[in-house]
Image 1: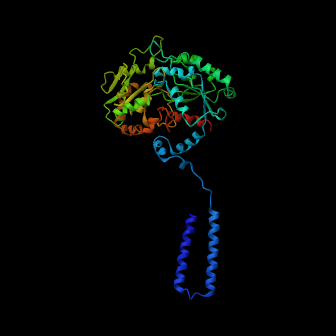
Image 2 (image 1 turned 180 degrees about the vertical axis):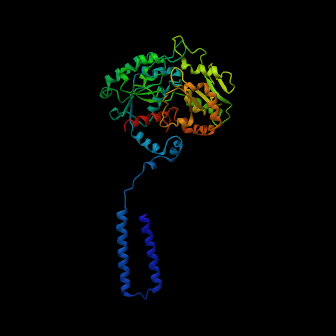
Image 3 (image 1 turned 120 degrees about the vertical axis):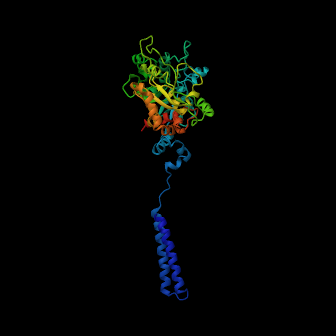
Length: 436
C-alpha cells in the first residue's frame, strides 16, 4: 500500500508541476522559483529513494505457492485447507528406511497371485508403494522410521483357502532377530521407531478368534513398535495395546475401476439394501461361540422375506456388480468388527451401514465417516428397515453427494505408487504426526 501510495503521490506532483509551467510560461518563470523547483525535485527524489529502501523486504515463498493448485482442489473435498498445507511439508521431510530382508520373508510368497490381492494384502501394497516413494531413504542413519516388510498373510489353508497365520509370530520374531543382530537401530530404540503391518482380524494378536487372540496377546518383541492394523475399537482391548494406526483392508483398485467402467457411480441403483456373506441360521458354532454376536442371524431372520432387502448367503465372484447397484450396503461385524465391505461399498458409491459397536474406523481425522455412512447399534438391528426408510426419505441425496466425491474413495484405496490422499499417503501422514 505504501509503495502504491508513493507512486500516486509522484503522479499528483507531476500533474501539479505541469500546471505551474502552463500558467507561468517558461520565459516568465522567476529566477528564485526555478532554483526552488530544482531543490524541491532533489528533496523529493531523496525521500522516495529512502522510502523504497525502508519498505524493502526479502522475497519469501509461501507454502501455498509450492503446492500445485490442482492438487489442492483434488483433495479439498475431504481434507481442510489447513491440513492440506501442513501435510505435504511434513511428508517432504519424512524419511523411512525399508529393511531388505531375505526373500523368504516377503517376495517368495508372491508366487501365489492371491498374496497381493486378498483382503489382508495391505502388507504387500504398502511395501510396494513405499519402495517407490519419495520418503524412502537408503541411509538408515537419517531415517525417522524403519519398515519391516514381512508378509504373514499369504500362507493359505489347503482346507478352506483362508489365510492361515499360525506361523506369523515365528516369522516376525525371526526377522527381528536378524535385523537386530546386523543393524544397531532396533536395539537403539528397542523397536519404538519400527513399523509392522498386521492386517488381520485382531491385528497384532495374530488369530482370527477373539478369545484366542486375547489369550495370546501381542508378541512381546512388538509391544514397543508401531503397528498398522485393520483392527481398532474405542474401548480397551488387549489386541490394540500397542502404538497403532487403523488402516483399511485391501480392496483392488483395478477391480473397482473395472466395475465402474461398466456401471458409473452415479448410475441407477435398483437394490435398496444389500448384503452378501456368511449369515448363520444357528449362529453358535462348534466352539460354543456366537458368530457376529448373532447380528447377521437377526438380519436374516427379520428381513429374509422383505423385498427391500437383497440378502444372499452364498458366494458370488461378481458381487461388486451388486454393490454398485445398491443404495445401502450392510456392514455388520463378523468375528472381528471390521470387514472389506466398508471399503468396497464406499469405493462403489453404496452407503455403508456400519453395525459393529465401538468400531474405530480407518483415518478418522481425514475421512468424513459421519457424512458418508450410517451407524446402527447392534441392539437396533431389528429396526433397520425403519431407519433406512427414514434416511431415504430425508437426507439420502446429501449423503450420496458426499460419498461420491472421488477423494473419499481415494483415501481408502492402496495404489502401486503413493498418490496424494490415498491410503498409503494417509499412513505416512499419520506417521509424520508422531514426530511432532
